[in-house]
Image (cartoon, rainbow, N blue to C red):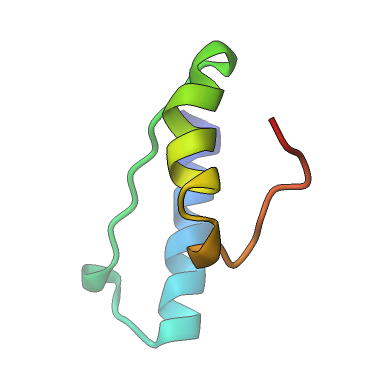
Length: 62
């Protein structure tokens, strides 16, 4: 949980700095996905099927 809080704080800080938004405009959700479910629940729908929208692509393929 501490790691999630630190990551959230870093994301919020960067969004505020880069986009010049206030803290009240930023929300962060973290969903844990098991390695077994990664390909089906994340890789295919969020990486393969929307690759044109990715600004940072992973350094692996499945």
